[in-house]
Image (tube, rainbow, N blue to C red; front, side):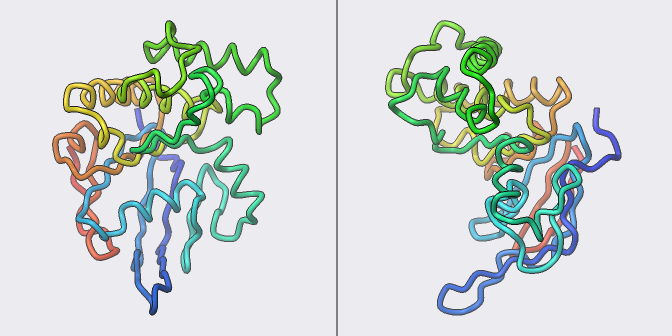
Length: 229
């Protein structure tokens, strides 16, 4: 159940890139993600939806405006402060999985906890529990090349959950799997939201977006509409 307490907040955010001239990716976005909410972002290619996700995750900083994650202002954060936010406050789920092929599933999931100072036994226990939670308790020591696309995405989701983040950011999480597998991935994200997690999802598929509580439509760097579902 979402509360009024925002876990992510964009306040008149503008992001301009210099690609042979200034290009406005975001042109003044104000948006709040209440704690426990489930938000999907849709828009055409180049609309700014991935930029929103990158800013929420501390992968980028705004040109103007403020981005707050769990009360931390990322707009003025140092690189070390942004790294701390990425490591503890945000869980990323990417379309391309971004798993390390030479590490086992349990090692991939435990990786964020290495940087957070957990000892080896605690890391493995936490990673094993999460992989069991996503239905991969029998694949702990398999490496990504030995797993299907859907299994790899579930490993990525378990890894995102490892540091108990304030928000889960999912960038086209069903983009590299078939429809049935994608539906199972979305069932898992639905379950995570039902358990109280805040989820921000970027997708180009309407049927995927409709799994959320609301859809934020972006076009030309601005929020065109916020659709309650």
